Image (cartoon, rainbow, N blue to C red):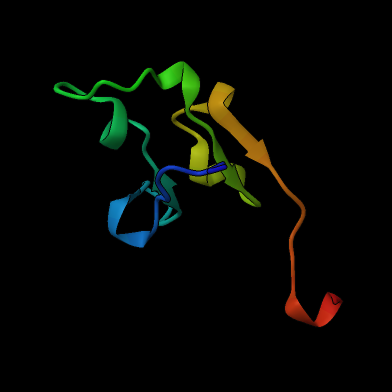
Length: 68
């Protein structure tokens, strides 16, 4: 069972005017795509990353490997 079909990473991000990285779902749901934006989510600890798609964002707590 696959939970994630694609992962957005820095190569698919752009920056806003303050320099925050933004994950843009249009990369996967734009013209020529067979994906519905309503079926996509962005999981991140920063709301800036999904500021263009707030209804598709899921904010998670900050995580540090030392928290294990």
